[in-house]
Structure formats: structure tokens, C-alpha cells
Image 1 (tube, rainbow, N blue to C red):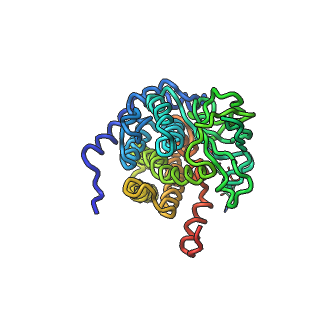
Image 2: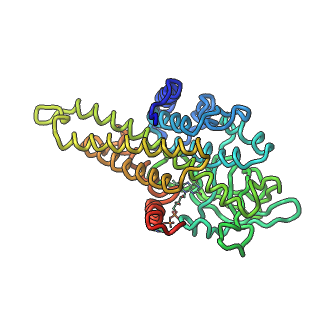
Image 3: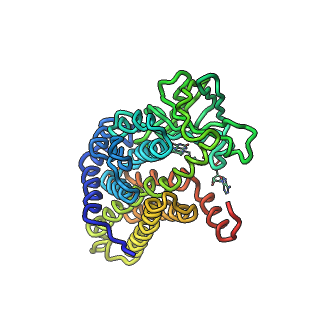
Length: 388
Ligand SMILES: Cc1cc2nc3c(=O)[nH]c(=O)nc-3n(C[C@H](O)[C@H](O)[C@H](O)COP(=O)(O)OP(=O)(O)OC[C@H]3O[C@@H](n4cnc5c(N)ncnc54)[C@H](O)[C@@H]3O)c2cc1C
């Protein structure tokens, strides 16, 4: 077993971190305050090779493995400390682009991936609805075949990049009689220019404010038949299974970058801030919190990179390993950010020290892409040998 990264892989991490620090971190306070998504930064991310990180070079991508995609997203997040921009990256590059790359036709890949890699086209993934979140297969959005088109009707909720996206991977019921329900759902590639596509209500959020979130409404939305992604009625099973491994490695890796930035920030503050005539780093109570942060960070890295490694090796990491990685990282990162605020005292409660934003941004991590309660259910079922 070799836990080391190669020199080239470390250079990828450091390059993404330097880019994030120089091009994205400046201005994050302002963008967070004004809830601004920056297209200028997005374009630069494309030039840096981040937006097409895992796709093959022939489709305009950077051709990185899952482990390397984790490294660049983690490094970027450490430098940028901008959770919203990183979430927008995940929704486009991972949740939308990976299904296109893995399940799409040659035509799909050529049409969408180069433009997504350059930053010209932004993607998104539409699974959740107003009445179905954890129980995603109970979705109501319906797709009916008419001639050479699919007609979509329904509303998708909480869509990251909804207001700015040009292409979306959209799930819809194609066989309402199927049991299990998941076996009657298909996946479609829907462009924002298709007739019947509408951006609904913009959603104001507690965190991730530099990414935009909205409802998307499909009213007799016309989708060409060739935009069915994968096999009819099996699109949901295929895309959700596929996304799971990528989401629980590459999309989560930025959380570790955020932890690293916060640990470094906090360590510096503890040495600079004096109380009772000495640096507050002298107080054991704070040292223990710092040690816990570091331990949680290192353990998260072991779990997440193991999932990424399994993804590269098998194309399909075990569901339970992925659930453990997601649950551990999301919950320990929230503790890390909360403790960082505590150690910064009153300054931690202000925006300018950058730690309160990290806590706000991280609150989605125990909800999005499967809540902590759902992950605990998966882990417990595996122990009890109940199957899924
Ligand atoms: C900022 C943001 C961005 C998002 N981006 C996207 C996106 O791009 N695309 C997309 O499709 N979705 C997106 N989502 C939606 C997200 O994936 C859902 O919010 C999430 O899956 C939870 O669904 P829900 O909100 O409907 O909660 P619910 O499913 O209603 O859950 C409510 C509570 O019930 C608990 N619960 C539910 N079922 C069980 C169970 N079986 N056992 C134990 N407890 C249970 C949950 O854990 C939770 O505590 C986003 C959400 C947010 C907030």
C-alpha cells in the first residue's frame, strides 16, 4: 500500500491552490455579501483546466484521474475559500459533465464537454423537487414521447447553477407503473434554450452565496429524442449510481481544502492574539481543539481519497465506503469551522476573518447529495446485513 502522491500530483494540487488564492480569494467577501456568481472567474477556471478536469483531452478536458480531480478541487478550495464557486464547479463539472462523458453518445460529448471545459457553457443536475428530496424516486416530473420529441412537465427544486446554466441533466418519470419507481425514470439533456424551459424562483440561502440556486420549471418543454441520456427507464439508476462515486470523492474534496485553510488561519491567529500576557496558543483548551481539527482533516483525507482510488480502479466505489466518507467529512468539517470561530473569539463572528463564511457554506454538506441521516441508514443496513 502506497499512500504517497507523485510529484506531478502534488504540483497539480499546488497549482490549483495558487490559482484559487490569486484569482478567486480576492473579492470573495464582496461576492458573498452580494450573492454574486462571477462569470469572469468561471472563464479563468476553464483556462486553468479545472472545469474539464476529469474528461478526456479529446473532449476538451484535462484528462485527470478521479484522485487527481480530487487533488485539484481540494487545492482550489484551499486557495479560494469560496464554497459557492466550488459548489458551482461540482454541479457543472461533476454532476452534469460526468454523466454526459460516461453515458452520453459521441454527439453529446462533442456538443457539450468542450464548451463546458472552456467555461462557455455551464451545467447543472436536476433531481430534487419540491415534494421529493431524500425520496428522490418519488419525483413527479413526467416525460412523454411525442413523435421525435420528449415533452417534459414538472418543477425541479434547489438547482445549483439554475439561473446561469445552459445545459442540465434532468431526471423525469417515463414509466409511472414501474416498481421499484426508480426503474421507470429516465435522464435527459435539456438546454436552457429549449421551448418550455423556465428559470423559476431564485432561492436565497444562508451559505454558498457565490453560487446561484433556483427552481427550474418545465412546461411542455420540448426535448429532441436524441437527448435521452442512457437507456430509457434506467437513466436514473445509471446516472445516480455513477454520480454517487464522483460526488462522494471529487465533489466533497473541496471540503478538505476548506478545513486546511481554516486550520492554517486559526493556527496563525492563536500565535498572534495575546490574552493574559501570552499568545492564546499557550492555552491547552485551544490546542486540543486545534489537534481535533487536524485529526479530522487527516482522517477525512484518508476516507475520501480511498473512495477516489476505488473509483479509478473499479469505476464504482462501494456504497458504504462512500457513505462513511461523506458522513465523516461533512460532520467533522462543520465542527472544524465552528471551533475555528470559537478560537477567533469575537473576530470569528465577523465576516472579515473568513471563518464564519466557511461554517455557513459547510451547512449544506450534511444535507445535499444525501443527508447525514440517510448515510447513517446506509451504513447501519450494511452492518445489519439488510441489503439496500
Ligand atoms: C444549496 C443547495 C444546493 C442544492 N443543489 C441541488 C442540485 O443542484 N440538484 C438537485 O437535484 N438537488 C440539489 N439540492 C437538493 C438537496 O440534494 C436536497 O435538499 C437533499 O437531498 C435533501 O432533500 P430535502 O431538502 O427534500 O429534505 P428531506 O428529504 O425532506 O429531509 C428532511 C429531513 O428528513 C430526514 N429524512 C428523510 N428521509 C429519511 C430517512 N429515510 N431516514 C432518516 N431521515 C430521513 C432528512 O435527513 C432530513 O433531516 C440542493 C440543496 C441545497 C440546499
